[in-house]
Amino acid sequence: MKLTIAVCDDESTIVEIVTSHIKSQDNNYEVKIIEALSGEELLEKIENKKIDVAFLDIEMEGIDGIELGKEIRKKYKDCIIVFITGFKARALEAFDINAFQYILKPITQERFSKCINDINLRLEEKIAFKEKNSIFIINNKKSVVKVKYKDIFYFEKLLNKIKVYTSEGDYEYYGTLKELKKELDMEKSFIQCHQGYIVNMSKIYKLKDKQIYMRDIKGYVPVSRKYKTEIKKILEENLFK
Image (cartoon, rainbow, N blue to C red; front, side, top):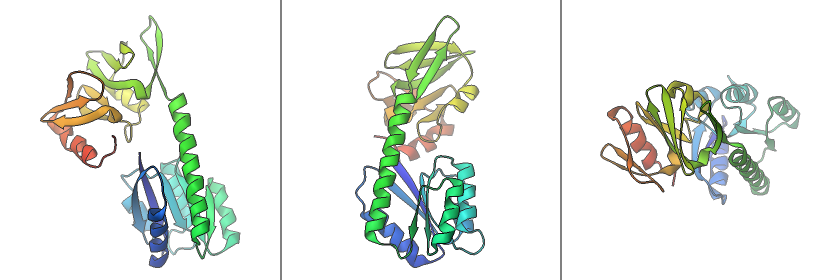
C-alpha cells in the first residue's frame, strides 16, 4: 500500500526533522512525502493529490495550521492530521477538526515514534474495516448479489448494462459507467482503461501494447490511447503489487 504524507512547517529545519523521523520508522507502506514551508504551498502541491497523513505546524504566517487542517479535512475527510506546535494551549484547538494527535516542540524521537506507531494502528484498523465492509451490491432485478471489492477483476460496459467479472463468477445489471464511477474508489482501487472498461488496480500485473493482463484470470482487457499513459504511470509507481 502506498502512503502519501504531507509535512508543513515554516521552519525548514522542522520539516527536515519530521521527514527524517518518518523515513527512519519501520512500516509496511511505500511512503511518499510532500514537503511545504507554508499552508499556501502545501495546498498548491496537494491540489490534485490524495494525502493520507498530514503533519502540520500550527503557528505559521498566512494560512496557519488550524485553517490548513480545516481545508485538508474538507477535501480528505479520512486524512490523519497531526499538529506540531510549541504552545500547548493552541494544540487544544486541533481537536475541533478531529485531529489525531499533537506533538509539542522540540520533537523527540521517542514521541514521534509513538505517534507513528499509533498512526500505523489506525491505518490497519481502517484497512481491516474497509475489507470487511467494502461490498459492491449488484441488483439485476431478478436477484441481489453482494461482492467484495477485492474479488472484482473488472467492469465492462454492454449497451445499457454493466458486466462485473469477479472471482466468484460474472454478473450483469442495468447501469452506466458514469454512475458506477461515483460508487467506486477511482483514486486508489479502480481505474478506467477504456471507454467501456474499469479495472481493479490490485489485479493488474502487466501492461503490454494496448492490453492489460490481470492476476488469476485468463485473457486481457483493452487499453485505449487516452488512458494508456496514466495506466503506465501507475504501474511504474508501483501502486499495486
